[in-house]
Structures are given as C-alpha cells and as structure tokens.
Image: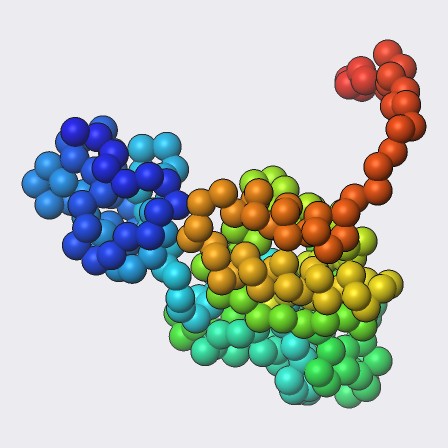
Length: 248
C-alpha cells in the first residue's frame, strides 16, 4: 500500500502509481478502486498527497499568470501580435505595452519592432483562446541581442530548478544572462560566445534528460568539465547585527 512509483519517474498510461487512500488523483491520473493510475505518458509529480503527470511532450497551452517570451509577428492598429509558441494568438495592447501615452495612429515600431523578443505576462485567456499580454510588471521587458532556443514547455520547471537552482547554476558557470519563459522559449546572452554556447548545450541537455534521476549532479559535472568555477580564498565577513535584523 502507498506510493509505488518514485517522484519524477517516467510512467505510461494505465500504470498503477499508488494503492490505498493516502494519495489523491490529480491532473493526468484517475482512481480505479484502491489504485491511482496514469492516463498518459509523462513524469510523476508528487505534490503533498496529490499525484500529477507532467507530459513529456506537447504544445504550450496559455494560462493566465504565466510569464512567457514572445516574438513580435505583426503590428496592428491597436497593438502588437505575438508568436508565443502556441496554437493560439497573443495580443499586446498599447495600454499594456508601455507606460507612455500612445496617440492613435502613432508609429508602434518605436516600442517593439517585428521579430523582436519580449518577456511578457499573460493577463487573460478568453473562451475563444485569445491571449492578452502585458509588459507592466517586474522583470517584464524587451529583450536585447542573444540566442533564442526552444524547449519542451513541460520541462521548463526542470530547467529552472527548485527556487531557480538549476538555471542559477548554469548562469554562474557560464557568466550568462538567461530568461526562461513558461512557454518553452529561452533567451541566453553572454559576453563570451564560447560560454554562451556551453549554456545552450546545458539547457538542451536538461531538455533531453529531464526524466533522468540525479540531473543536477549531471549538469554540474558537465559544466565543471568545460567552465570550472574559479576558486576563491577570500574570507567572507560576518554580517553586522543591524544588517541581519528585519526592519519593522
């Protein structure tokens, strides 16, 4: 009785994940008597008592609140139309595209040009699957020069890691800037082309091996062989008492 499959293991449709009533069926699972079974091929994700299946493949399905990276594909009279790696179109209106007042008929390429990439947040998804975006918020902005790579949207959490641990590991080793959109579009920019290329390889490796156990150690080893972290003997000063206190 209990959990039969370990967290982050690959499961197939119909596979028994758990027995008994200690766990609850979540997205991609169902209860069959005392058993909880999978409805799809994917990774088992254990969240407390809930069992969910994260598909290994699949197109991005826009959700309100997601932070994504989109490419300007068209400029309309009232705003910008974006490709967000989805079957559904996304629109950034003038009022959500800038803090400035934009006069009717103004040249909108002053703000975002065709083929430029932007970090935006989804603020609405209509019943007809029309997606509304905004760039008003922390971290939302137009992206500069850099590499764009595509990953499987379902594997984005593995690329980011717990509390950003995986992507931080890559950033620190390669000295690059990395932004990961929840829609599977990743922007990478580094001062050194060689290190930028290594960051791309590391992310592609995670995308290919997201279902493999011990992935963090694999990526750390991969990075250490190519760009080892510089060793430092500098003594870290203890923070002053007043610096560690939380101001009321």
